[in-house]
Length: 469
Image (tube, rainbow, N blue to C red; front, side, top):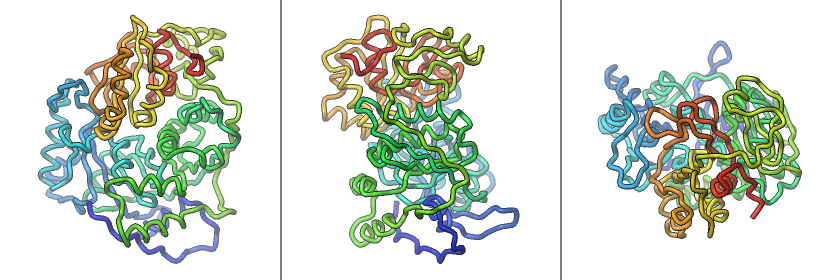
Protein backbone atom coordinates (compact mmCIF):
# COMPACT_ATOMS: atom_id res chain seq x y z
CA UNK A 1 0.00 0.00 0.00
CA UNK A 2 1.46 3.32 -1.08
CA UNK A 3 1.90 6.10 1.46
CA UNK A 4 0.94 9.52 0.21
CA UNK A 5 1.83 12.92 1.57
CA UNK A 6 -0.95 14.06 3.90
CA UNK A 7 -3.61 16.11 2.20
CA UNK A 8 -3.36 19.86 2.56
CA UNK A 9 -5.87 21.28 5.00
CA UNK A 10 -8.64 23.25 3.34
CA UNK A 11 -9.28 26.81 4.47
CA UNK A 12 -12.04 26.73 7.06
CA UNK A 13 -15.49 27.49 5.68
CA UNK A 14 -16.72 28.82 8.97
CA UNK A 15 -15.34 30.68 11.95
CA UNK A 16 -17.10 28.27 14.30
CA UNK A 17 -14.65 26.34 16.42
CA UNK A 18 -14.55 22.64 15.52
CA UNK A 19 -14.12 19.27 17.14
CA UNK A 20 -11.46 16.87 15.89
CA UNK A 21 -14.21 14.87 14.20
CA UNK A 22 -15.37 17.89 12.23
CA UNK A 23 -11.80 18.74 11.26
CA UNK A 24 -11.15 15.29 9.80
CA UNK A 25 -14.52 15.38 8.08
CA UNK A 26 -13.87 18.81 6.51
CA UNK A 27 -10.58 17.63 5.04
CA UNK A 28 -12.35 14.82 3.21
CA UNK A 29 -15.42 16.57 1.84
CA UNK A 30 -15.27 16.51 -1.96
CA UNK A 31 -18.58 18.34 -2.48
CA UNK A 32 -21.43 19.66 -0.37
CA UNK A 33 -24.76 18.38 -1.70
CA UNK A 34 -28.38 19.30 -1.33
CA UNK A 35 -30.27 17.96 1.64
CA UNK A 36 -27.34 18.31 4.04
CA UNK A 37 -25.32 15.41 2.65
CA UNK A 38 -21.79 15.46 1.29
CA UNK A 39 -19.61 13.44 -1.03
CA UNK A 40 -16.74 12.28 1.19
CA UNK A 41 -13.37 10.89 0.12
CA UNK A 42 -12.59 7.51 1.70
CA UNK A 43 -8.87 6.83 2.22
CA UNK A 44 -9.04 3.12 3.01
CA UNK A 45 -11.56 0.37 2.32
CA UNK A 46 -11.40 -2.92 4.21
CA UNK A 47 -13.38 -6.02 3.29
CA UNK A 48 -13.72 -9.29 5.14
CA UNK A 49 -15.05 -12.69 4.22
CA UNK A 50 -18.54 -12.28 5.62
CA UNK A 51 -20.04 -10.36 2.72
CA UNK A 52 -17.00 -8.61 1.30
CA UNK A 53 -16.43 -11.19 -1.42
CA UNK A 54 -20.06 -11.02 -2.50
CA UNK A 55 -19.75 -7.25 -2.86
CA UNK A 56 -16.68 -7.73 -5.05
CA UNK A 57 -18.71 -10.18 -7.12
CA UNK A 58 -21.42 -7.54 -7.61
CA UNK A 59 -18.80 -5.11 -8.90
CA UNK A 60 -17.54 -7.70 -11.36
CA UNK A 61 -21.03 -8.55 -12.57
CA UNK A 62 -21.76 -4.85 -13.10
CA UNK A 63 -18.52 -4.38 -15.03
CA UNK A 64 -17.15 -1.89 -12.51
CA UNK A 65 -13.48 -1.92 -11.46
CA UNK A 66 -12.24 -1.03 -7.99
CA UNK A 67 -11.28 2.64 -8.20
CA UNK A 68 -8.10 2.44 -6.13
CA UNK A 69 -6.98 -1.17 -5.53
CA UNK A 70 -3.93 -0.02 -3.54
CA UNK A 71 -6.27 1.55 -0.96
CA UNK A 72 -8.19 -1.70 -0.36
CA UNK A 73 -7.24 -4.60 1.93
CA UNK A 74 -9.18 -7.85 2.24
CA UNK A 75 -8.84 -10.33 5.10
CA UNK A 76 -10.22 -13.76 5.94
CA UNK A 77 -11.34 -13.59 9.55
CA UNK A 78 -15.02 -14.14 10.34
CA UNK A 79 -15.68 -17.65 9.00
CA UNK A 80 -12.20 -19.19 9.05
CA UNK A 81 -11.39 -22.16 11.25
CA UNK A 82 -9.12 -21.09 14.14
CA UNK A 83 -8.09 -24.51 15.39
CA UNK A 84 -4.41 -25.48 15.13
CA UNK A 85 -3.42 -27.00 11.80
CA UNK A 86 -6.16 -25.27 9.87
CA UNK A 87 -6.13 -25.47 6.09
CA UNK A 88 -7.99 -22.30 5.23
CA UNK A 89 -11.35 -24.01 5.09
CA UNK A 90 -14.49 -23.11 7.02
CA UNK A 91 -16.89 -25.15 9.11
CA UNK A 92 -19.51 -22.42 9.04
CA UNK A 93 -22.44 -23.33 6.76
CA UNK A 94 -21.87 -21.34 3.58
CA UNK A 95 -18.43 -20.32 4.78
CA UNK A 96 -16.60 -22.04 1.94
CA UNK A 97 -18.57 -19.98 -0.56
CA UNK A 98 -17.82 -16.75 1.31
CA UNK A 99 -14.08 -17.52 1.40
CA UNK A 100 -14.02 -18.55 -2.25
CA UNK A 101 -15.75 -15.33 -3.28
CA UNK A 102 -13.32 -13.21 -1.25
CA UNK A 103 -10.29 -14.95 -2.73
CA UNK A 104 -11.61 -14.78 -6.28
CA UNK A 105 -12.69 -11.15 -5.90
CA UNK A 106 -9.32 -10.11 -4.54
CA UNK A 107 -7.57 -11.77 -7.49
CA UNK A 108 -9.90 -10.23 -10.07
CA UNK A 109 -9.54 -6.72 -8.72
CA UNK A 110 -5.86 -6.89 -7.78
CA UNK A 111 -6.41 -6.41 -4.05
CA UNK A 112 -4.10 -7.30 -1.22
CA UNK A 113 -5.59 -10.35 0.49
CA UNK A 114 -4.54 -11.38 3.98
CA UNK A 115 -5.55 -15.02 3.82
CA UNK A 116 -4.94 -17.58 6.56
CA UNK A 117 -1.43 -18.32 5.29
CA UNK A 118 -0.43 -14.63 5.26
CA UNK A 119 1.60 -13.36 8.26
CA UNK A 120 -0.59 -10.25 8.38
CA UNK A 121 -3.90 -12.14 8.62
CA UNK A 122 -6.22 -11.48 11.49
CA UNK A 123 -9.43 -9.83 12.63
CA UNK A 124 -9.97 -6.79 10.44
CA UNK A 125 -10.15 -4.27 13.30
CA UNK A 126 -7.02 -5.70 14.90
CA UNK A 127 -4.82 -5.80 11.80
CA UNK A 128 -5.76 -2.38 10.41
CA UNK A 129 -4.16 -0.35 13.24
CA UNK A 130 -1.35 -2.82 13.97
CA UNK A 131 -0.26 -2.85 10.31
CA UNK A 132 -0.65 0.90 9.77
CA UNK A 133 -3.47 0.42 7.27
CA UNK A 134 -5.51 2.77 9.44
CA UNK A 135 -3.69 5.97 10.37
CA UNK A 136 -4.63 9.13 12.29
CA UNK A 137 -6.75 11.53 10.32
CA UNK A 138 -7.72 9.02 7.62
CA UNK A 139 -11.24 7.99 6.68
CA UNK A 140 -11.95 4.27 6.50
CA UNK A 141 -14.93 2.00 5.87
CA UNK A 142 -15.52 -1.73 6.25
CA UNK A 143 -18.49 -4.06 6.02
CA UNK A 144 -18.60 -4.48 9.79
CA UNK A 145 -20.40 -2.64 12.59
CA UNK A 146 -17.32 -2.37 14.81
CA UNK A 147 -15.21 -0.50 12.24
CA UNK A 148 -15.16 2.52 14.56
CA UNK A 149 -12.63 0.58 16.64
CA UNK A 150 -9.79 2.28 14.73
CA UNK A 151 -10.95 5.63 16.04
CA UNK A 152 -8.63 4.68 18.89
CA UNK A 153 -5.72 5.91 16.76
CA UNK A 154 -7.54 9.02 15.56
CA UNK A 155 -9.02 7.67 12.31
CA UNK A 156 -12.59 8.45 11.30
CA UNK A 157 -14.10 5.10 10.38
CA UNK A 158 -17.55 3.75 9.67
CA UNK A 159 -19.16 0.36 9.37
CA UNK A 160 -21.18 0.19 6.15
CA UNK A 161 -23.60 -2.11 4.39
CA UNK A 162 -22.95 -3.85 1.10
CA UNK A 163 -24.40 -1.07 -1.05
CA UNK A 164 -22.22 1.57 0.58
CA UNK A 165 -19.23 -0.76 0.43
CA UNK A 166 -19.77 -1.23 -3.28
CA UNK A 167 -19.94 2.54 -3.75
CA UNK A 168 -16.73 3.11 -1.80
CA UNK A 169 -14.90 0.42 -3.76
CA UNK A 170 -16.09 1.69 -7.14
CA UNK A 171 -15.64 5.43 -6.55
CA UNK A 172 -13.39 5.97 -3.54
CA UNK A 173 -16.12 8.17 -2.07
CA UNK A 174 -19.38 7.90 -0.14
CA UNK A 175 -22.53 9.99 0.12
CA UNK A 176 -22.89 10.71 3.83
CA UNK A 177 -24.62 12.97 6.30
CA UNK A 178 -22.23 15.11 8.35
CA UNK A 179 -21.25 13.80 11.80
CA UNK A 180 -23.15 14.76 14.91
CA UNK A 181 -20.32 15.28 17.42
CA UNK A 182 -20.72 14.08 20.99
CA UNK A 183 -18.07 14.45 23.68
CA UNK A 184 -17.72 11.84 26.41
CA UNK A 185 -15.28 12.92 29.11
CA UNK A 186 -13.89 10.20 31.39
CA UNK A 187 -12.66 11.69 34.64
CA UNK A 188 -11.10 10.51 37.90
CA UNK A 189 -8.17 8.20 38.53
CA UNK A 190 -8.83 4.77 37.07
CA UNK A 191 -8.15 2.02 39.66
CA UNK A 192 -5.18 -0.18 38.74
CA UNK A 193 -7.23 -3.35 38.26
CA UNK A 194 -9.84 -1.67 36.07
CA UNK A 195 -9.31 -2.14 32.33
CA UNK A 196 -10.53 -0.22 29.29
CA UNK A 197 -13.14 -2.97 28.83
CA UNK A 198 -14.45 -2.28 32.32
CA UNK A 199 -14.61 1.44 31.59
CA UNK A 200 -16.46 0.83 28.32
CA UNK A 201 -18.97 -1.56 29.90
CA UNK A 202 -19.58 0.86 32.76
CA UNK A 203 -20.14 3.62 30.22
CA UNK A 204 -22.73 1.45 28.48
CA UNK A 205 -24.47 0.94 31.79
CA UNK A 206 -24.50 4.66 32.58
CA UNK A 207 -25.52 5.99 29.16
CA UNK A 208 -27.60 3.04 27.97
CA UNK A 209 -27.59 1.17 24.68
CA UNK A 210 -28.96 4.27 22.87
CA UNK A 211 -26.84 6.72 24.82
CA UNK A 212 -24.94 7.95 21.76
CA UNK A 213 -27.53 7.15 19.10
CA UNK A 214 -26.44 8.47 15.71
CA UNK A 215 -23.56 10.49 17.13
CA UNK A 216 -19.84 10.42 16.51
CA UNK A 217 -18.30 10.15 19.96
CA UNK A 218 -15.05 11.86 20.88
CA UNK A 219 -13.57 10.35 24.02
CA UNK A 220 -11.67 12.85 26.17
CA UNK A 221 -10.49 13.33 29.73
CA UNK A 222 -7.62 12.13 31.94
CA UNK A 223 -8.70 8.48 31.88
CA UNK A 224 -8.49 8.45 28.08
CA UNK A 225 -5.20 10.35 28.02
CA UNK A 226 -3.71 7.74 30.34
CA UNK A 227 -4.78 4.80 28.18
CA UNK A 228 -2.53 2.96 25.76
CA UNK A 229 -3.57 2.91 22.11
CA UNK A 230 -4.74 -0.69 22.47
CA UNK A 231 -6.98 0.35 25.36
CA UNK A 232 -8.36 3.23 23.29
CA UNK A 233 -9.17 0.76 20.51
CA UNK A 234 -11.20 -1.27 23.01
CA UNK A 235 -13.00 1.85 24.18
CA UNK A 236 -13.94 2.91 20.64
CA UNK A 237 -14.94 -0.65 19.78
CA UNK A 238 -17.65 -0.63 22.46
CA UNK A 239 -19.00 2.78 21.35
CA UNK A 240 -20.99 0.80 18.79
CA UNK A 241 -22.91 -0.70 21.72
CA UNK A 242 -24.02 2.84 22.64
CA UNK A 243 -25.53 3.08 19.14
CA UNK A 244 -22.82 5.56 18.16
CA UNK A 245 -22.15 6.10 14.46
CA UNK A 246 -18.45 5.86 15.25
CA UNK A 247 -15.92 7.07 17.83
CA UNK A 248 -12.57 8.88 17.92
CA UNK A 249 -9.73 9.66 20.30
CA UNK A 250 -7.67 12.63 19.10
CA UNK A 251 -4.10 11.55 18.26
CA UNK A 252 -1.37 12.49 20.75
CA UNK A 253 2.20 11.46 21.57
CA UNK A 254 0.99 8.02 22.66
CA UNK A 255 -0.66 7.57 19.26
CA UNK A 256 2.39 8.72 17.34
CA UNK A 257 4.70 6.35 19.26
CA UNK A 258 2.36 3.45 18.46
CA UNK A 259 2.00 4.31 14.77
CA UNK A 260 5.77 4.70 14.37
CA UNK A 261 6.17 0.95 15.01
CA UNK A 262 3.64 -0.16 12.39
CA UNK A 263 4.89 -1.66 9.09
CA UNK A 264 2.94 0.69 6.79
CA UNK A 265 3.58 3.95 8.64
CA UNK A 266 5.05 6.78 6.55
CA UNK A 267 8.85 7.02 6.60
CA UNK A 268 11.43 9.78 6.21
CA UNK A 269 10.09 13.15 5.07
CA UNK A 270 6.61 11.70 4.78
CA UNK A 271 6.74 10.74 8.45
CA UNK A 272 7.72 14.27 9.51
CA UNK A 273 4.90 15.76 7.43
CA UNK A 274 2.42 13.23 8.81
CA UNK A 275 3.36 13.91 12.44
CA UNK A 276 2.95 17.64 11.88
CA UNK A 277 -0.49 16.97 10.42
CA UNK A 278 -1.54 14.60 13.19
CA UNK A 279 -0.34 16.92 15.93
CA UNK A 280 -2.73 19.57 14.63
CA UNK A 281 -5.71 17.23 14.95
CA UNK A 282 -7.13 18.56 18.19
CA UNK A 283 -10.56 19.81 19.10
CA UNK A 284 -10.71 23.55 19.58
CA UNK A 285 -11.15 24.49 23.27
CA UNK A 286 -14.61 25.94 22.61
CA UNK A 287 -15.73 23.38 20.02
CA UNK A 288 -19.47 22.79 19.90
CA UNK A 289 -21.02 19.37 20.48
CA UNK A 290 -24.54 18.16 19.98
CA UNK A 291 -24.33 16.22 23.23
CA UNK A 292 -21.88 15.86 26.12
CA UNK A 293 -21.50 13.40 28.97
CA UNK A 294 -19.06 13.16 31.87
CA UNK A 295 -18.43 9.86 33.66
CA UNK A 296 -16.28 9.52 36.78
CA UNK A 297 -14.18 6.33 36.68
CA UNK A 298 -12.47 6.79 40.05
CA UNK A 299 -14.56 4.24 41.96
CA UNK A 300 -14.91 1.59 39.28
CA UNK A 301 -14.47 -2.12 39.88
CA UNK A 302 -14.22 -4.85 37.22
CA UNK A 303 -17.50 -5.11 35.31
CA UNK A 304 -19.59 -8.09 34.23
CA UNK A 305 -22.81 -8.04 32.23
CA UNK A 306 -25.81 -9.81 33.70
CA UNK A 307 -28.30 -9.51 30.83
CA UNK A 308 -28.52 -9.61 27.05
CA UNK A 309 -27.17 -6.11 26.33
CA UNK A 310 -23.77 -4.59 27.17
CA UNK A 311 -25.75 -1.91 29.01
CA UNK A 312 -27.07 -4.51 31.45
CA UNK A 313 -23.91 -4.53 33.53
CA UNK A 314 -22.78 -4.29 37.16
CA UNK A 315 -19.57 -4.43 39.14
CA UNK A 316 -18.33 -7.96 39.64
CA UNK A 317 -19.22 -7.80 43.33
CA UNK A 318 -22.73 -6.48 42.70
CA UNK A 319 -26.14 -8.08 42.60
CA UNK A 320 -28.43 -8.51 39.63
CA UNK A 321 -30.85 -5.57 39.49
CA UNK A 322 -34.49 -5.66 38.61
CA UNK A 323 -34.55 -5.57 34.84
CA UNK A 324 -36.38 -6.71 31.73
CA UNK A 325 -38.07 -10.03 32.44
CA UNK A 326 -37.01 -11.46 29.10
CA UNK A 327 -33.31 -10.82 29.82
CA UNK A 328 -33.55 -12.29 33.32
CA UNK A 329 -35.39 -15.35 32.04
CA UNK A 330 -32.97 -15.98 29.19
CA UNK A 331 -29.95 -15.60 31.49
CA UNK A 332 -31.68 -17.71 34.20
CA UNK A 333 -31.10 -15.06 36.86
CA UNK A 334 -33.22 -13.32 39.47
CA UNK A 335 -33.05 -9.80 40.94
CA UNK A 336 -30.80 -9.59 43.99
CA UNK A 337 -28.73 -12.59 42.98
CA UNK A 338 -24.95 -12.08 43.19
CA UNK A 339 -22.93 -12.68 40.02
CA UNK A 340 -19.83 -13.54 41.99
CA UNK A 341 -19.65 -17.32 42.28
CA UNK A 342 -22.19 -18.02 39.53
CA UNK A 343 -21.00 -21.32 37.92
CA UNK A 344 -19.83 -21.22 34.30
CA UNK A 345 -18.92 -23.88 31.77
CA UNK A 346 -17.20 -21.74 29.13
CA UNK A 347 -14.51 -19.05 28.96
CA UNK A 348 -13.51 -17.19 25.79
CA UNK A 349 -10.70 -14.68 25.23
CA UNK A 350 -10.71 -13.16 21.75
CA UNK A 351 -12.53 -10.79 19.34
CA UNK A 352 -11.82 -7.34 17.91
CA UNK A 353 -12.52 -5.97 21.40
CA UNK A 354 -9.93 -7.86 23.45
CA UNK A 355 -7.50 -10.07 21.50
CA UNK A 356 -4.45 -7.81 21.30
CA UNK A 357 -1.13 -8.55 22.92
CA UNK A 358 -1.86 -6.41 26.00
CA UNK A 359 -5.11 -8.35 26.52
CA UNK A 360 -3.31 -11.69 26.36
CA UNK A 361 -0.62 -10.47 28.75
CA UNK A 362 -3.26 -9.40 31.27
CA UNK A 363 -5.02 -12.77 31.09
CA UNK A 364 -1.75 -14.71 31.29
CA UNK A 365 -0.78 -12.78 34.41
CA UNK A 366 -3.92 -14.13 36.10
CA UNK A 367 -3.44 -17.68 34.76
CA UNK A 368 0.26 -18.16 35.48
CA UNK A 369 0.69 -21.13 37.82
CA UNK A 370 -3.06 -21.85 37.94
CA UNK A 371 -5.39 -24.32 36.20
CA UNK A 372 -8.79 -23.97 34.59
CA UNK A 373 -11.60 -25.63 36.54
CA UNK A 374 -12.35 -29.20 35.35
CA UNK A 375 -15.76 -28.52 33.82
CA UNK A 376 -14.82 -25.31 31.98
CA UNK A 377 -14.10 -25.23 28.26
CA UNK A 378 -11.58 -22.40 27.86
CA UNK A 379 -10.40 -20.96 24.54
CA UNK A 380 -7.99 -18.17 23.61
CA UNK A 381 -7.95 -16.83 20.04
CA UNK A 382 -5.33 -14.14 19.28
CA UNK A 383 -6.62 -11.26 17.21
CA UNK A 384 -3.97 -11.57 14.51
CA UNK A 385 -1.04 -13.65 13.37
CA UNK A 386 1.27 -10.90 14.62
CA UNK A 387 -0.32 -11.02 18.08
CA UNK A 388 -0.03 -14.80 18.13
CA UNK A 389 3.66 -14.71 17.19
CA UNK A 390 4.43 -12.03 19.77
CA UNK A 391 2.59 -13.97 22.46
CA UNK A 392 4.51 -17.14 21.61
CA UNK A 393 7.81 -15.22 21.64
CA UNK A 394 6.95 -14.12 25.19
CA UNK A 395 5.88 -17.62 26.23
CA UNK A 396 2.28 -16.64 26.82
CA UNK A 397 1.02 -19.60 24.80
CA UNK A 398 2.80 -21.89 27.27
CA UNK A 399 0.96 -20.19 30.13
CA UNK A 400 -2.42 -20.56 28.42
CA UNK A 401 -1.84 -24.20 27.49
CA UNK A 402 -0.51 -25.12 30.92
CA UNK A 403 -3.60 -23.59 32.50
CA UNK A 404 -5.88 -25.64 30.25
CA UNK A 405 -6.84 -23.11 27.57
CA UNK A 406 -7.03 -24.13 23.93
CA UNK A 407 -4.52 -21.95 22.03
CA UNK A 408 -5.81 -21.01 18.58
CA UNK A 409 -4.97 -19.38 15.26
CA UNK A 410 -6.17 -15.84 14.54
CA UNK A 411 -9.78 -15.10 13.66
CA UNK A 412 -13.17 -14.03 14.99
CA UNK A 413 -13.96 -17.57 16.15
CA UNK A 414 -16.73 -17.80 18.73
CA UNK A 415 -17.28 -14.08 19.16
CA UNK A 416 -20.43 -14.89 17.22
CA UNK A 417 -22.19 -18.06 16.18
CA UNK A 418 -22.74 -18.59 12.46
CA UNK A 419 -23.38 -22.30 12.54
CA UNK A 420 -19.90 -23.65 13.25
CA UNK A 421 -18.26 -24.00 16.67
CA UNK A 422 -20.30 -22.59 19.53
CA UNK A 423 -20.96 -22.47 23.26
CA UNK A 424 -24.50 -23.74 22.76
CA UNK A 425 -26.36 -24.22 26.02
CA UNK A 426 -23.44 -23.02 28.14
CA UNK A 427 -22.93 -20.10 30.51
CA UNK A 428 -19.82 -18.29 29.27
CA UNK A 429 -17.63 -15.46 30.50
CA UNK A 430 -16.33 -13.80 27.37
CA UNK A 431 -14.12 -10.87 26.35
CA UNK A 432 -16.28 -10.14 23.30
CA UNK A 433 -18.56 -7.16 22.62
CA UNK A 434 -22.09 -8.52 22.30
CA UNK A 435 -24.21 -10.75 24.50
CA UNK A 436 -27.61 -10.85 22.88
CA UNK A 437 -29.60 -14.08 22.85
CA UNK A 438 -27.84 -16.95 21.06
CA UNK A 439 -24.86 -14.74 20.10
CA UNK A 440 -22.36 -17.49 20.93
CA UNK A 441 -24.60 -20.43 20.19
CA UNK A 442 -28.12 -21.66 20.70
CA UNK A 443 -29.21 -20.77 24.25
CA UNK A 444 -25.67 -19.67 25.18
CA UNK A 445 -25.65 -17.25 28.12
CA UNK A 446 -22.80 -14.81 27.60
CA UNK A 447 -21.38 -12.55 30.32
CA UNK A 448 -19.11 -9.84 28.88
CA UNK A 449 -16.00 -9.01 30.88
CA UNK A 450 -12.32 -8.13 30.55
CA UNK A 451 -9.71 -10.78 29.65
CA UNK A 452 -8.45 -10.74 33.25
CA UNK A 453 -11.95 -11.41 34.56
CA UNK A 454 -12.44 -14.19 32.00
CA UNK A 455 -9.18 -15.81 33.10
CA UNK A 456 -10.01 -15.58 36.80
CA UNK A 457 -13.47 -17.01 36.17
CA UNK A 458 -12.09 -19.89 34.12
CA UNK A 459 -9.87 -20.89 37.04
CA UNK A 460 -12.65 -20.54 39.60
CA UNK A 461 -15.24 -22.31 37.46
CA UNK A 462 -17.53 -19.41 38.28
CA UNK A 463 -17.67 -15.65 37.76
CA UNK A 464 -14.74 -14.35 39.75
CA UNK A 465 -13.05 -11.08 40.74
CA UNK A 466 -9.64 -10.81 39.01
CA UNK A 467 -8.38 -8.72 41.94
CA UNK A 468 -8.65 -11.70 44.28
CA UNK A 469 -5.61 -14.05 44.17
